[in-house]
Length: 227
Image (cartoon, rainbow, N blue to C red; front, side):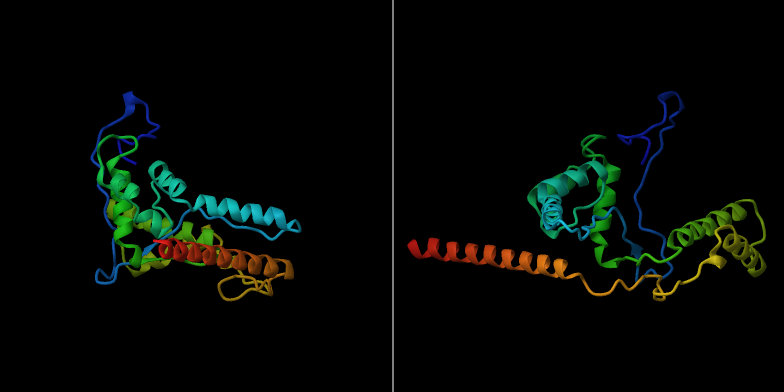
């Protein structure tokens, strides 16, 4: 984002330089700021082939390493999802070099990451439910239409909002969304208990990690006892 963005797709003859500043999302309650946290996710599905599931889990563990998390933050602008990576010397050095260039150390991208890190405790997530995408689009439409009307000098009162709400509800078919049988109030289905194979796999992973930790503790004790 910004006229100096490394991934800008505007031709040079059409580009108009402008200053980009990263700010918090406007708040209704400034004493208790809230910002939604969202982004790409990874899911591991239960398969008949337990080795395929295990390979997927190991790949997910690789994605959680500092090297991948910090590299992803540098290229995409998201912050690392692990505290270990966030607090690492390498990542802190990356944040401290904001503005050195418009590629790796692009200031807007790093400023956004810093702002997010400072407001992690003020973030929230929402569960996916039937019609959530339509509802999000409708919310954006309400804001966009209201801003356009304000700029045009139109009267914005209760009647305006009632009409706008009705139009947007109809446009995104929000009045046609129903909770189907087997779903709760959020539209989430009850999938029942985990399959036996999934329970066994999770239990095996817990045992493996416990043994690894036990080995590390014993090795540490032996090294210090030998001194």
